[in-house]
Image 1 (cartoon, one colour):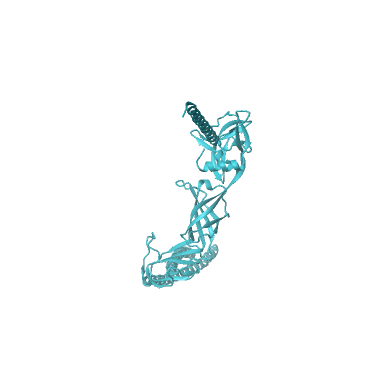
Image 2 (image 1 turned 45 degrees about the vertical axis):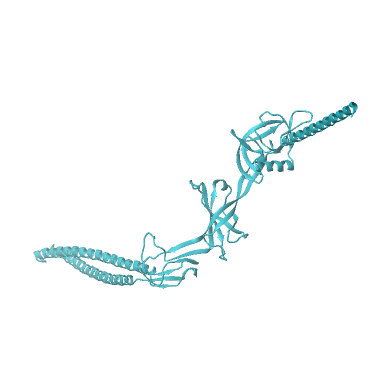
Length: 442
């Protein structure tokens, strides 16, 4: 091999190496450029002729909040009454058991109490005695009144005689001198007797009144005892079903004023149910009576029931910051049971309009929550208060109005005074921003 051949081979190797190096550098430059473009795809684009960024913006909209929350609730019987004994005794009849369906007035339990029956008889005997005593005093009063009439008549007769004697005495010798004096004494005696009889009549009247009160009191005792006997016959207070029974035929029952013992039976009204929901403070806006809301229960998967808002708490529990609300649920077929757990689709409708922007347009930093408003190509940070969400929109309150433009994607890199070019955000921009926002990206 000569020197010329070696030189040509060396030159060929050098050219090949140089070519490979150039290709590698070109590929690296393209890769770096691609990476740089990808990194800057989410940032405002630079204009081809200026250094001002192009920023997607959206208008602030004024809308009425209308959102559905899922709130837990509990179904309760419309009426739930534990039946306790009012009178001590023993069960002589029981005609119901758990699951018995009753109409109002149906007999459930009869309690026997011989002692109470005896008390009624004794009270009735006292009424008879008081009545007899009353009648005797009435008779005595009548007798005294009769005596008073007789004495009064005698007094009038004696007074007439006295007046005639006085007139006759004016003629000398017509009558004896002592006849007038005798008649005066007679009239005085009549007056004294009349006063005595009047006192006796007054006493007789007072005694009659007293005996009348005794009769009335005795009758009230009988009436009270008879009312107690009515408690021995226990009947259904309303249409319902027996859900609990704790006594049997012959069971001894006692009276517990504090109702700490188990009830004899428990009756519940099921044809109407109460759906009780603890509504959070931020969900009470726009709530009103008569509003119909759907709900579901685990026992009937996929089936939707409805309840009507009937009773509002009108006050929040200071511990839980919730307001109890009751819905009336018609349950004629008896499918729903008291005690069931329910999930209510609670609709919140604010009674006035507020401002909304897409959720990526609102962000927070150490200074607070804000949006980036853009006017005449200049950015301005606007502090806002975040409200409730409605779909991909979020409610805001701040120094901003409907129709103002804000950056679709708020970031602390956009400072007050930054100049930008704007364009209305497209659906693709919205989808991309929402995707990054839900993923926690910037």
